[in-house]
Image (cartoon, rainbow, N blue to C red; front, side):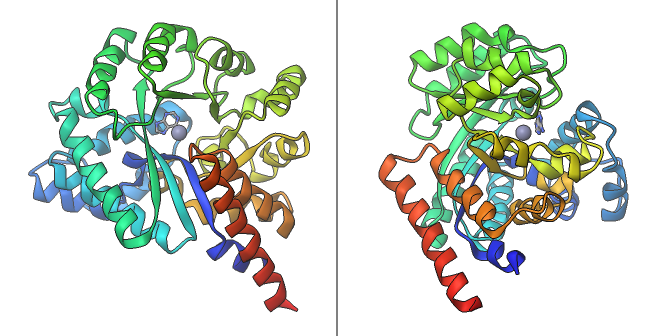
Length: 340
Ligand code: ADE
Ligand code: ZN
């Protein structure tokens, strides 16, 4: 029953790497279109490689997969395929990451990637009414100097890029390495988010708040290890964009029953459910809602709270946030009436 509620419940997705939506079928098709040689010949071979023993193991494949994205239309097709799926999952707003350094490092221009993503997002608004924000991530395994190059490019496209983020391998790449580029980005008017506490310790979450001045934490699972930090996140209403299937597939948790999402909700945190890299982790946003619903015995009210949180935690203006929250409430009421 609750699965049916999840299906069309209005929701926002706030933690999604567009490059992580590259399905094996599209990877093979783009490899052919662009004359790129891959170490795989079939969809089955690609899927068989998606057996990760941790974040770095995944990232190696994720960056290799990007090699098929060359032309602007590749980025458009990738983003469009994602939006078509979201239109069928109740998603009315998306805030998506892209990794420009993953493209510029292999000779694909910043504007090529950005242009394809933006034209698809604009088409998504026209055809599906899906609103969007774009977040440019710095790759934390690379030097801060290179993050500055990405920031300088982003400054030429402020009308399309809303915030900066920090992703890639967390262990050994602490927030403090990016203090200067975050300060510069905020001074340029970008909002800030960062992956923290995915594999790294609670201290990285504290540092993301204190020294990168993020307004939202991506993942944040290990924040739960520090009771004082949990109290602070609850007090400040700092959102966490959690990604359950990602955590399971990257072995951050042994089973979904171990996921900290319900504990975080019970502690009063503004928790949201997202898919991270759905093609690689076996499910899009509604699969993530269903996975935590089943494993953590979430009630219909919990599901409604998570969907409302997704709008409350978004970068939408207050009026649009409230419209999203009201749409969730209306849908939930209608669903309850039909069930009687
Ligand atoms: N890049 C894409 N997915 C990521 C994740 N889950 N963590 C860090 N960097 C990423
Ligand atoms: Zn992520």
